Picture (cartoon, chains in turn orange, blue):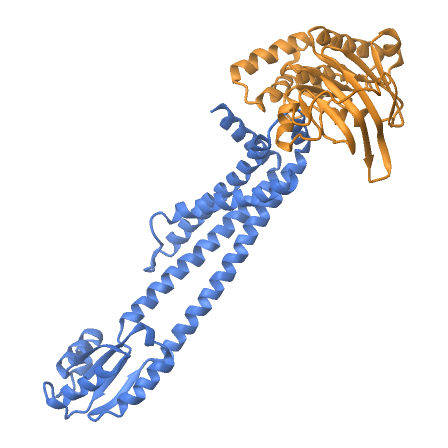
Length: 232
Length: 284
């Protein structure tokens, strides 16, 4: 599903954000991505959704190879991913329904289908009663649930969550985590970047631990490129 | 259909969000298109006046009193005149025709006190358009003055020089004005769209993250620019109509019937160009 093969990312020719990172994540896995601030978690996630390309090595996500992917392919890659950020990144000028529907609208989904799917994910995330509220009328936890609803409404293969509980208290964090577990239980791969030691210790999922750009745990230095150069 | 509706909805949302800037931009577009239309209509009217001037005789050759109509002397003068390559057409205006023409122009009162017809017979000469430079005309006039039986030659050299100079001056002014207006249109629309993109950068980021194609991201901004151009065009045409009413006392040409449509189309076109440059720069 996701494969990093000796990925190194160097910014401005000096700063090494990722250093020879190799790992493989299978379908329907739940993975913690941990490490101190500045260890390279967000950079690694950006490589998965190909906002960044490696300086050397290969990233392979849902059938797209970072070495050969074209800019015009990126929208189609991202439709296979759901992305959740710490700061929610909701559109404040539209209500909850519109925020979630937005992700379907950009893919050209029909209006009737949009309504059906949006109400389905809002029910799942427990937000049906708030569908006409605006983000600034919601609590932090509710806003993050809207953000998750938006990320999963397209039935993504992989859900990337970059510190989704970073701004939330312990109880709300646990609620969000349980929601991610539910999504994972349907077969969606979940990669959760977090500092939250409570969650990491409590739940024994696989851990990818980054330190100063290097993967010090959970990686596999022997990962070989699984696909030929022509494969996309 | 749903997609088009969505693009329009987003475009109108963008226009509404940047209300003040949109207002300033639309007014600038309206003013630019209005002045561009005035320049074009000024051009059309001046050209039509010049065309009428072109239809008038270029040179009048006045004959001595002794040269009578149908005389061999007049035939000889006509033969010499028509022999000049610059002369396209020459017509004899006899004394009676000159009298009638004077009467129709100034009335019979002025000739009341005169017993005999004092007006001389003349030959009106029309020059081929390629010889119509003031230098060529004055050289021809000098030659015509030398023909026997010719009393005097009158030509509108100064008037022609003025017409020539004015025509080129007008072309220049119209060109500069049109260029400035186009620049204003482009600058205003692209600046507004840049600001809109900047104000909606969160939306753009979100669109990228959820897999929107470049077409999908750019289209609302392009539509926004085109809508600004269209609204500006409609307002410009509205002011042009007010101008038309104000000047209704004058016999002026207001261009073909589709002129207002062309003005609005230009607004849409410049809206598209302006927003395209902003989108290319900021959403690359």
